[in-house]
Length: 165
Length: 352
Image 1 (cartoon, rainbow over the protein chains, first blue to last red):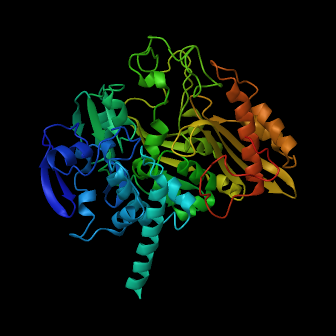
Image 2: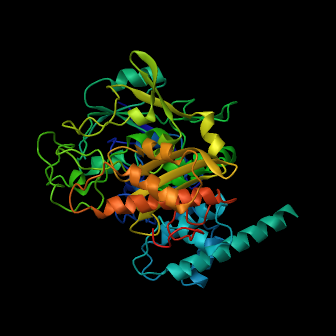
C-alpha cells in the first residue's frame, strides 16, 4: 500500500512517505518535519496545545490521521510570522503577558488567529473566552490571553479597513 | 494503537464494499475514533476513509423549509450557516454548546450520531464493560454515576449518549439517510439509536457496511424557529459534556401553545424525546405551572441507575427552564455562551 501523501506546510508543498497509517498530523509535524513549535499536551483533543490550521481552519492535530489529510494545506506556529515581523496575535500575547511557561502558547496563538478569522467573537470578551475554551493554560494566563486576543482582533480589523480604503 | 489497513474509496459504493468486511470502520474526522483507538478501546482492522468522497458535504435547504445535511458537513459549518441557524436555532445552539471550536471545525454530522458514550468505565480498559467487552459486566453499577442514565437503562449498561446535536434533532423528527449493500433506506433518528437491553454493544440499527449519507430535518421543525432553545447543564462553563440537557420548542398562537417539541440529553443511551410532555402542553398557556407539569410527565418513568437520583429532579428543572426560555423567544443573536444555564430568564427559577 502506497501511503505517500502531499502536504503544503507553511507554504511549502512536499511529498511525505508514511511508513505507518497510525501517524497523527501532530507526530508528523514534530517527529518527521522537525516543526516542534506545535506541542503535544494531552494527545486527546482536550487541551488544544496541538492546534494548527488545516485548509484555513483551526483543528486539534493530535486527533487527525496524517494519511487522511492528503493534499491539505497546513499552517503551524512556525509559519505565522513574516521573517522577524511577528503576527499581530503573537505581538499582542507579548504585550499582554498572555503566557507564563509558554507550553500552551503556540496552540493558544493558532487558536486565536483562527477565532479572529472566523469572525464570530468580535470585541465581546465573553465570546472570546467561549471561543478559546478549547485551549487550556495551566499557568492560568487567561486574563492576559483574552486581552491579547481582543487587542489583536481590533488591530487586524483596523488594518483590514485600511487595506480596503 | 493497533495497526490497520487504510482504504481510500473513490465512491460511496466502494466505501460500502470496503467497510462490509469484519473489523472495518469508517473514518471521518476521527475526533472520537482516533481517541478511542489510541487506548485500544476500539481496534479496527481496517479504516475506510470518507474524507475524499465528494457530494457528502453539502447543506441543502429544501423548499418546504427543511434541510438536508450531508454526513460530512462539519459541525461549525452547519451551526454558522445563516439560513440553517435562522430556521433551526435550537439545533445551531446545541451544536455550539458542544466540544470546542477546534473539534467543531473537524467533527462531522454523521460522526456526531455515531460518537461513543463518555462513560468512564467504557474508556477504562481495566474496568468491566458490557459495551466494550460483551459479557464482562458493568463496573459503572455501584461506581461514579454522575454522567449515567436515569431513563431507558438496563442491568447490562447505564451509559448515556453524549451528543448535544442529536437532542434537538430528535425533537424535530430528523430522518437519517443510510446507504448500504441493499441500497438506500431512511430511518427516524428516534429509532436509529438502540437502548442497551442485554446487548449494549449494538448501539444503532446500522448493519456492517451501512453508511450514513445525510440527516434530513423536515420543514415542520422550522415552524418553531421563533420559540426554540437548547439548555445544557455541565460541570464547566464551556467544553464539557451535558449532565442533563433539554431542547424545547413551542408554537404559540393567541396566548396558547398549539404545538410543542421536547427532548432530553444526558439521561439515556439515546436522545430522549418526551412526547407525553409535548401532548400535555397543547392548549395550555405558556406559564411556569404548565411547564412544571410537562417536565414531571417527561420524567415519570425515570429511575436512578446509581447515586444519581439528583439527575431526575435536575432534568425536570432543566426542561421547565428550557420551556420558559423558548416561550420568551429565540434571541436575535446566538448567546455568547450557547445553551448556558448562566443566563437569567424572566419568570423562571434562577437555579435550574
